[in-house]
Amino acid sequence: MTIDEKIKTAKQKLGEKIPCSIEVLTPVHIGSGVKLAEGIDFVKDNNSVHIVPQSELMKYLEDNPDERDRFISGNYKLNSLQRIPEGRRYNISLGRTSEINEFERNGYGKPYIPGSSIKGAIRTILLKKRFDELSNDEKNNLLNKVNNPKKEWAAEPIVKKLLGDDSNKNLMRVLEIFDAEFDTVDLEKVLILSLTNDLGTSYGWKQLWNRQNTTDHKRASQISCEILPVGLKSYFSISLHNFLMNDPTANSTLVFNEDSLSDIKKLVKTINFYSNQKLNKEKEFFEKLTTPKNLTTVIKEIDNLINRLNNLSQDEFIIRISWGSGWKGMTGDFLDDNWLQIFRNKYRLGKSGFDIFPKTRRIVFEEDEPKYLTGWVKVKLNDNKPVTLKKEKIEKDEKIDSNNWAAVLSQKYNVKETKKKK
Image 1 (cartoon, rainbow, N blue to C red):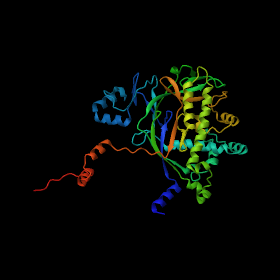
Image 2 (cartoon, rainbow, N blue to C red; image 1 turned 90 degrees about the horizontal axis):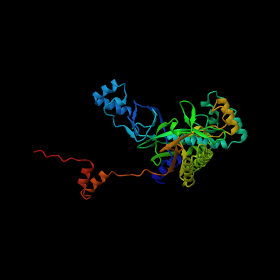
Image 3 (spheres, one colour; image 1 turned 90 degrees about the vertical axis):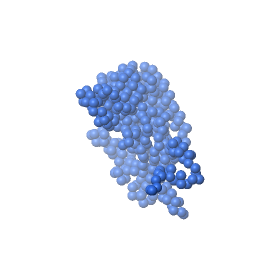
Image 4 (cartoon, one colour; image 1 turned 135 degrees about the vertical axis):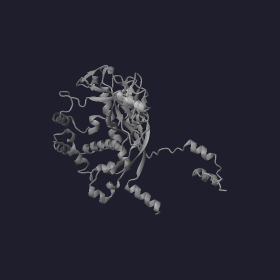
């Protein structure tokens, strides 16, 4: 065996990086935790929004002392400036909205999907899968151990039992996922749909200021978010360290036992199985809604996702990530009706006296029409980012005589001609 073959074998055993593409199927929002404020972070008119990053604003004020004085005397409002710095512009009307949920950005200012967001979604799926595989007695015994007074930590006994007691023995250490960087985002409005009867047939749009619902979406509260638009594509990597699952010594020490993490194709199959379940449940939820009217466009988009999922290749999966995935998406949706009611009473979840939980959904509007669920993406394994040469570099190289090696070298390394001393 050659050294290259040995290296390749070692990489395959330890867990080689798998190049992947990620495509946005429905609008995706990854929150930075910052809510941009009108007048301070952005200005708006009837048809557009102009966001100015703080770093860009500070540089502009530093270079323009007169503008700095106007800004200070104008109570630090952007509209006190004579000229607004370039920033980011969106062609959208925000109406009464005075804040925007900012998209996460990396150190270079690029919007990105953190690998942790994808890994967290896969973790939730594996948690549900492993819980589903327990016997009824095992499930009941495990759920009876949930007694933490804080609901944020209520699932800790379940997570430790199914995924591992500590970080060293946590099953998810087998999986490593890297970030996916994008070039741009859009600005869209999201409304909260809320059920208004126990049959799940009637709904309204949430007015957050008075906790009421309205059938007129134009009178509802609008959440403005920077989102990755449908069709956008990027690239990242996944590493499955399956030697931790397959190596006898590692396996006996860590006591890992999860078939879906022993092979990447099995993981893909598991993700698609549970994504299909989730989409069909969501379709059922929306098909029941008949008052004030059927949400046909939303249902059509869910059908599109289901059709795409059913026609995937063996190295593709569809999954829902991050903001808007809801309570069930975050927890795994593994409780039956009886246990769900027990925990609702214990931790005061949802509206008292309302049988359906959760009863809300975040919906992205397009041209004044409810259309998309949030957060659905498609991942394709073994898909490399296309290599593109700069046009300028190609044209430059074409002008060089390939037989003139001196000219080639001087052009490549920018060698300058020196004048001879007299």
